[in-house]
Length: 481
Ligand SMILES: Cc1ncc(COP(=O)(O)O)c(C=O)c1O
Image 1 (cartoon, rainbow, N blue to C red):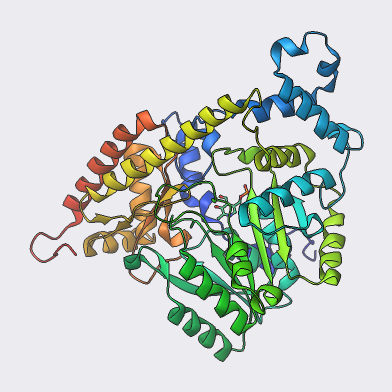
Image 2: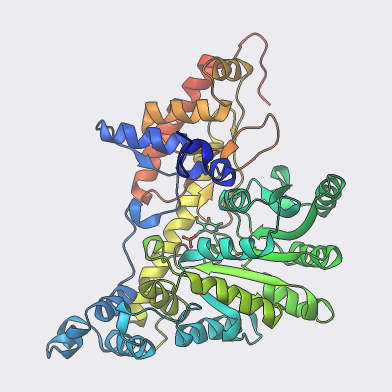
């Protein structure tokens, strides 16, 4: 019998090529161990609520009322819900054509797109046009939609930072394009060197690749750095000179843990630069309710905003979005609430500020606890997490450990992370899943475990690591770097 269309051998090769380390071998092993009854600390995905973060009260109140609109008719509703939550629920329901159970426009509800445009306008100091904002089921869907629109065949290249968040490598593989890596400099706090960028483009062109787009992740995942204004300007100029569309992944814009470099959007820096670049450079920026102090990953609310994209292209993107009919409507409402939270004077304002500040301050403390913890370990060095939700320590594996990994048929950092998982229950992602320089090893962990659990987690990590190093270090020859 000839093979069938869904037999493995006949599948779309691009589907088979996709790799996604965040839910890869380590995650699968951790899930197995959990089933066997071992306590696992999942630090592999930036999923704050899964690690105990409590939802913010106000948005949940509003969405609860939108989901159960009959409560609005209950005379006692005011005893349970504050008046501003009731008013906001009515506002969002009035924006829909039949409540949360009805499809919205494929670009999202016009009223929420307007709220997003107002937010972007306040943030950047330049008005934003709701017609150029599309709401999506989380930022991932938006990124995939835009990459799909850009990539025509395997000769189309997309510049992606290494280490990178594997959404980019996976989506580029799925759409049959070519990933063109540019390396972030660990010793320069994961900064971006334009000279290296030029080399990456030249090298890709020499292989017949047409480089069409560049991705930046700011603040960085997995590396946690915040790009400076000078760096952003250089990147924008570079994209302008090389005729690249810039994809600005800014999903961690609320997660900043230092005061020297506040978040600056690529759009603001671009518009500050003035013409001709501000009128010509094509930019698509992404944001989500999954990160920040909201951490509402399961709600799947996101948007992308387009700058200098021609109307005919916007129409094509709209047409393709229409294939999926509608982004998830509750997710759109979360997004509306994120970009338009309670204001001073609103009943819920103080609670909202207390809750959100509490989460951010705790994340800041956890970032410090984790970095300090890693830096106290043998053969481990770690840059401070300036932003985002991750720590990305370098693990200097002794040659004997690398040999042992080879014997076990494992990539060295996978070998280390598996041993860590078995010994401590800490589930991380090996650096090789994000890309790293040859011969250099890392792991990525989120900074999300509860603050009170952090000292014990770091002590358990240190015990494992230092014993591992003791076991594999060659005390005669190996010197610590
Ligand atoms: C850099 C980056 N971009 C995009 C996403 C996707 O977020 P969403 O949940 O909105 O799809 C993530 C999720 O971790 C991320 O780290």
